[in-house]
Image (cartoon, rainbow, N blue to C red):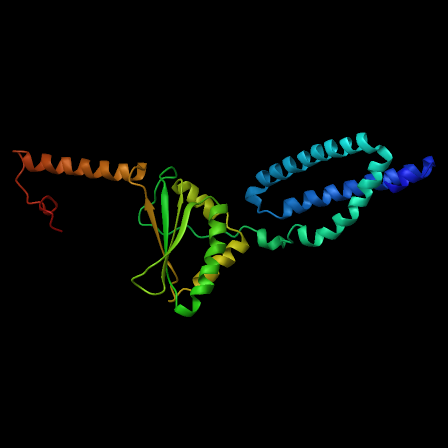
Length: 262
């Protein structure tokens, strides 16, 4: 920019413009690749969409600002002022720059299917996941720090109403709870954990007493289709039992479930 202002030679101006254009292309390409590599694969489209929206809005805002400055002080002085702002901009990169993320940290780590007695349908929900931890007193502070990392991971991958609670009746017992909209969404959430998220999960397991680690339970909302099917099936079976007991053609059979005995 300084050369464009100070030179009156067309060749020098052309070289300066070519260098500025090349630097612009390199900068934009670097930013695009950085935005692509800084997020896991499952959220690339949304992340790039947000990045491009902010990038294009910054160009529009910058054009308005520098256009107003050029109208006020002239093109020559506005170019010199823009060149001068590069110096403090380069100095602030060290403190305001984007965090460096290793490519392996964003790699999605596959997880095993949850162990359940009855497999819900994909649309059944909401689903509340309860994770029960038993932590020794000397590891409680480290455990709370790991829980903060897990909070970010759970919320980022689709959970809501996250919380961690400490049992006042039993020292060292913590319960983590979070809710996802449906069983299918929970399975999708499990497929979104990255290597960094898995490291936090492993750390929480490592701070838990016992070889089996924390206990995980899954609860389906009573108004979900899953619970409705179970209640409908129970009512249907109860109705059939009553018909069998009241039928004069069939012998009366004592049913333990009618008396509440097991």
